[in-house]
Length: 516
Image (cartoon, rainbow, N blue to C red; front, top):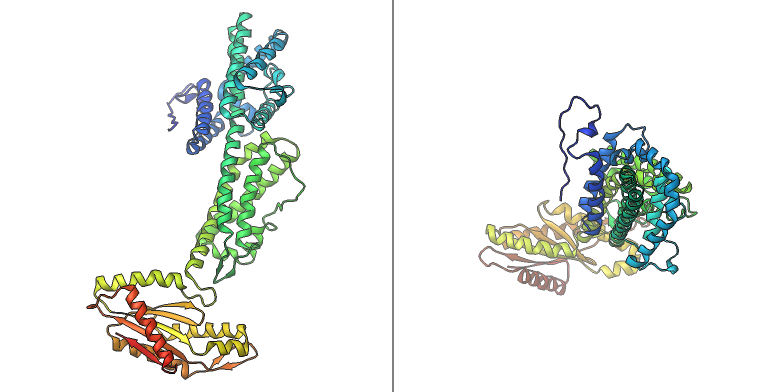
């Protein structure tokens, strides 16, 4: 559902808001309805659209120096003359308030099942605020807190809207008994203002519930261990930065709903937070250069808004916090989307990369084997598979320790990469075993490639940094060639290469055996 607006050209009015197709008197009722409808139907895209449109219209209706309450009053058409009229009849309204309150409480008991165990449905001063004639920030805060109170008691947005409608009818009845039609209209516009403020609170409550459900899944997802070329992304790095900023967004919404401020001190500068520390430690280089300026600006903006939100929370002004949430959400989304993308890249890399050698891992090998065999069949090209095993690797581990063993594995990986072509795919299968998918035209070419690789290990010693130990190793290679004519499957190519490797080991190691 879309909520559109059009402008018409007038020369008599200097107020652009009066040039809207929707009159300012009826526009607010539509906004309130669509916001509540969106919350009830879980159509958050609609809520966000209407919410932004609403504040755009409010901004156009008045100058930037106008108070938030004044903007809302202007939007719904609650004029100064309405306020004066209500003040003029304040004495009679106050006299009717006791009876009105009793009828209102009866409505709560009858239609909402409100019991004494729930306490008073209305906070102190709420009834009096309706007829006070002053509808400023204080009034809006009272009504906002009332919505929070109802939310805490389990009332939803629909029941809150019904409660305001019931109060509207009571006010109309009081005014009509006094023969004051204009007073009834003025009081109805006060109810419009109340619905606007309370709809905001229920919208934020619904948004917070949704964000918490999303966060539970999202934060669990990124808690997976993750390592890359840049090293391990530990809780003190990228993941911690992401989690901290996600949790701060949730905290801001909670503070806007009146949740108490705890004693923990949140870092309020962009340098001292987890993200700032990660950026300083080199994390900024992981963000594309074209996105860095916007990212840093969003980070600074989020912290400025955070300071204001905390100050409002300390002053117990949750209604004023809501003013900052749209800007905070935009800044937070800019940050979280970039960090989430980086984490997703790290997780995808982890799923396909061996952390020790940075070669493709077994998962990637199995996936690529299927693709390369299928491609070879389509293009009618040959394909070779080599399994490479470090001879007597257990003896190296037993004699020198696993640290030296790891360096030997890393050195072996580098040597294989140096000897084979860049077009060949190289993987660490596991332990001291490697695999390579090689584009060749014949079994002979595959054998020549394998022999060249084997000989490169017998010609050069392997130096390690662990006490400058010098180690010479040999490798055994088993391979299989799939010619275009044979149409081999991935399984047959794999099994044949595996058998060839075992034959090379049984033949005394430091051997090449290629099946074709």
